[in-house]
Length: 211
Image 1 (cartoon, rainbow, N blue to C red):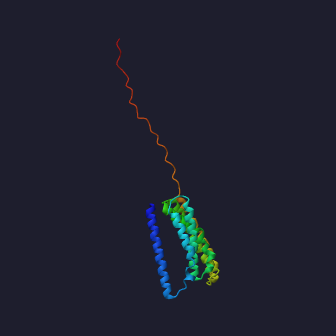
Image 2: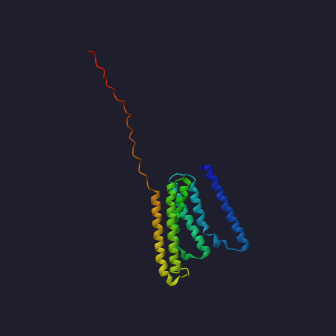
Image 3: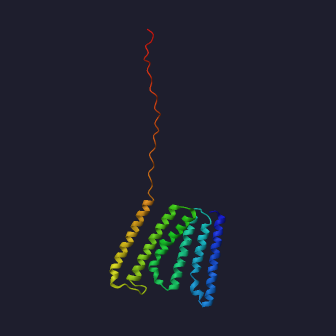
């Protein structure tokens, strides 16, 4: 993808973002929503998106850190936005898995897609799977077993917790095995020995010489 195509994509994305924000503001005016209480996380999401867009302008190796940093900022804003509209601020007890290593996996995945680096994409996918498993396991533990959000499982939590830990361990182990198999380096083929072409047999002169 050349710079002109990337510029067009960034322009279209910016246009869609402005369209969505404008439509949201217009709808909020009609249904009397206090936008200040809803939109403040976008002061974090938008700068993160801008940082990522700046990193995508060039495929230089140093821009990968810029994209990853922008992903961390943007994912932080998204988590805050969801917590703000749901009121579940206690979810930080397990939402950290989406931030670290989740946001790093997102940034590396997008960078791998941008540069066409298959190895980076596969590594990022593995990171995202680990982040999802950690998020799910800790979410069930804190929300269901401990009930920090008001929902408790009761005595059954004594069984659910070890089962979740076993499932998370199995998922991470299987993920590591599958990732390791995909990265096995094939041994080089042995060199081929080129043999010399067979020489024709030497014919002996059986005729007697002059007597």
